Each structure stands twice: as structure tokens, then as C-alpha cells.
Length: 187
Image 1 (cartoon, one colour):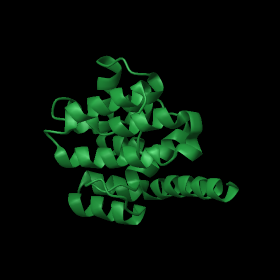
Image 2 (image 1 turned 90 degrees about the vertical axis):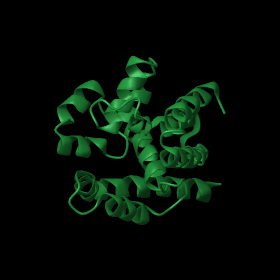
Image 3 (image 1 turned 60 degrees about the vertical axis):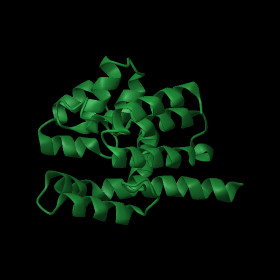
Image 4 (image 1 turned 90 degrees about the horizontal axis):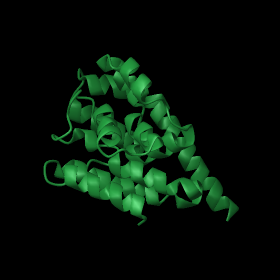
């Protein structure tokens, strides 16, 4: 584990392990998925893994400000940890956060503070998040999306967001799966 990744995992552990153990399990699983993309990402693996560790820190009760976890986590990283801009943008925009921000009336705020990052890294982080269960196990995107909708219920804002984002989330997962397949065929 690189020093940057170790730094990210320690921040996530401090913010999630005790108050949100299930979220901590998910985060560990997302980071493990990120490590599995080494052959696809090469030099960008460290940035992806750090963002995987940090993507859900905004759920921590110590950080909740806007109530929108991607924004709260990215603001903490920017304002308190003075993290790299790209890392903050990945956390702020993970898993189609812009669509949920629109539902919450925060789209302009998110876009102005944290513009969209590189699409390949964003897709990779979405892949890691959307193929990891709340307990940290690898799952299909279909199972993950169904679990989220079931957990929140039919009328919830998050369920509406997932239904709107589903085509984009599926595309991101399929894109990464395609790159993984291509790398394995080229070997």
C-alpha cells in the first residue's frame, strides 16, 4: 500500500469504522475492487484506490453538513485535508452524484465546487462502488441497484436517483468490465 493510499485508508477508518461499521465494510470492499483494476489503470491505480477509500466519508456523522455525502466528503478533503483536486472531484462526483445533486437542488453547487473528473477514473470508481455490497462483498450491478432501491423504498429520493442514473451506472460498469476483458485477452 502506497503512502497516499495508506493516508486515505486511515482517514476512512477514523471516520467510518466505529460510527458506521457497515459503511466501513462497504468501503473496504470498494478499495479491494479498486486494487483489482491494476492491469487496467496502471499509473492511475493509486488515485483510484485512494478515492475508493474516501468515496463515502461524507456519511460520517462528524462531516455531515449539506446532507449530501459526496459533497460533504469532498469538502472535508479539500478544506481540512487539503487533498489533491482530482481526488476531491472523484469523491464529489462518484457514482453519478450529479444526478442525485439535481434531485437535492445541489447540482450547481456540486458543479461549481467540484467539476467532473476524467471519465475513465470516474467509471472505474463507479464500477468499484456499484459492484460492492453494503457488507463489502462483490455483487453484480443489478443486485447492487436492487439492494439500494429496496433499502430506501419506492418513494425515496435515493431510489428516484438510482432509477434515473441506472443507464449511466450500468454503462460505467460495462465499460470497465470490457477493459478488464480486453486486458485479459491481450495477455
